[in-house]
Length: 256
Image (cartoon, rainbow, N blue to C red):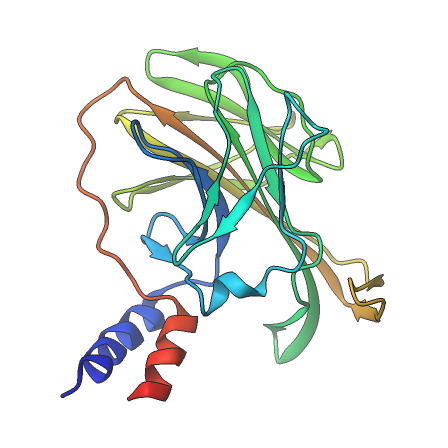
């Protein structure tokens, strides 16, 4: 059996058990360069180029401390390298408001979906203010290995919404926001954490593509993450086994 066929079979098994909950996130472990990833953090599923990384049309990153200068995002095999010197008090943001419209299948219906992936990185857990349409920020309340976060949609607290905390070793913890859009998680391990939330606005509409074409949609879908690194806590568990993204499975299928 060829390597491509072997990888394809393994990837198909992983693909069948994976969800569609893709996200973007910044990551910078100690001593490593800052990078922006696309995939599923908890599953160690990273989109690549050629493949899923090439779908972005207007992905932009910026720093709260210097809004006038966009971050330089350089496409590499599994990530965008980010040329930026991070600081503890800073927030880095990124989003693509023109990700290609796709079909979301619900109850035998195909809904044209205008998806906006977005992310925020923070150097510490001091309180921040919302900037993104769907945003997750620390509230500054952090004690005894537990931290509080607040979710906003259109600058208003988003109540009764599921929020997940993901670790690199594959643990996923879910909490639901209270009336003020707040949720708390324990942070027992050292390492990078990703807090993620999704929201769907089912108001149909249309947008203008970067090429000037009118594109109708049935729903607007938002996916936002907050990532940060914790140096305190227990030694982290091993990284979850790497999984193949659907785009890479499709590429290997053509080669097989």
